[in-house]
Image (tube, rainbow, N blue to C red; front, top):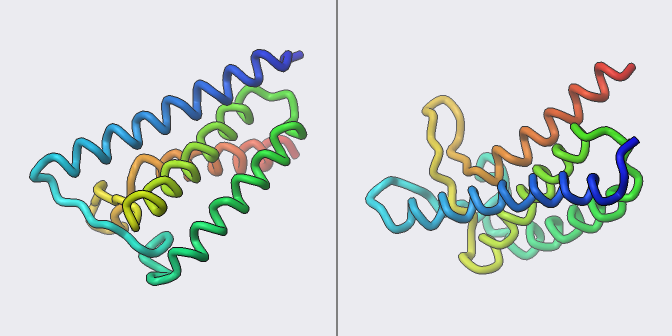
Length: 136
């Protein structure tokens, strides 16, 4: 059985490491000659010009995550995934609020550019999906 302290520690550590990696990478790319884009939309550049909606949607996602925090099953892997998803939402929300758009800089050619926050949220959601499939 996982106690509340361990749960908080796992979620917090995953969150902090992912947010720090996201923020440091965005600062580094902006201060370099590396290419990056400021995405004023959502994933894949959708919803450009809808920044207020995206900000409200991000706060709604944070509220949902906070609601489900207390209801997470006692599984360390889910605590890790929760922290990663939470970090992804917060990382991109802070860009939208303070920079007017999300800084995307990882470009692998066949996929739209993304960032560490996107990667964090995607990995976290992927872990949850795999857990749900395997737990049935």
